[in-house]
Image 1 (cartoon, rainbow, N blue to C red):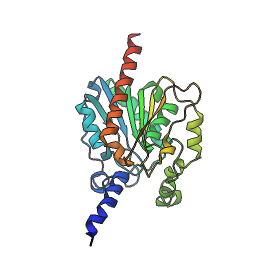
Image 2: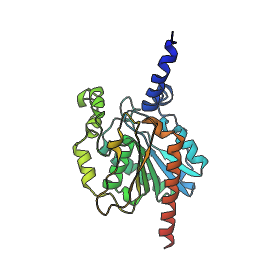
Image 3: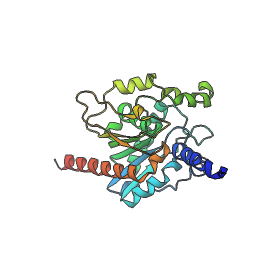
Image 4: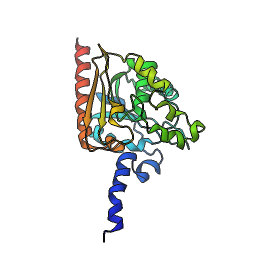
Length: 260
């Protein structure tokens, strides 16, 4: 007879890869150690986490980036219970814009790269397109972000009591006003944007994440990975290799612009 515990392990592993570790992501609050040295590095990266998660989801990513010589910073995006990311995308992008200007003035930071996971990628895109982020961002990489909305946001609508707790899930539904606005507006051509998506992402199916550039939008690219769950996109080594290559390429582009 099969061991019931063994039979449950693949299910538990799948849930962890799709939604994240309950202990390490959800129960720890926002416990990433704050460091104020990020602006001292030649290249700096801002990390923005997704809906109903905390910035603990970036623990592995931050360690890898620092090991490879990048300065890293992230924000506590607040929300439900003052820890989970449930505030609206426009509100968060405006808040981030204000915080970033204060940080840039305080630390002498000029430009930086942005990596956004899931909803975090949509916050970053809104910031770049509508809150002056085009004057700060060197590049944007999104991981499993619903650029066309995702049908699973309907689950979030239910969890948020049909919008009474948070309207954020409505904004990530296919065809929402926010999705239509972001797709209608032109993404700044001088900022490379890469969407990394997975065929095994159950939260944001791959067709929801694929960027579809219009004529002239040459800065948009897609990177497909397989056998990586939604939250696993933040710590999978293959995904990190793509991120490292993209950051390197974007940094070289900005160096060439500066020298030219």
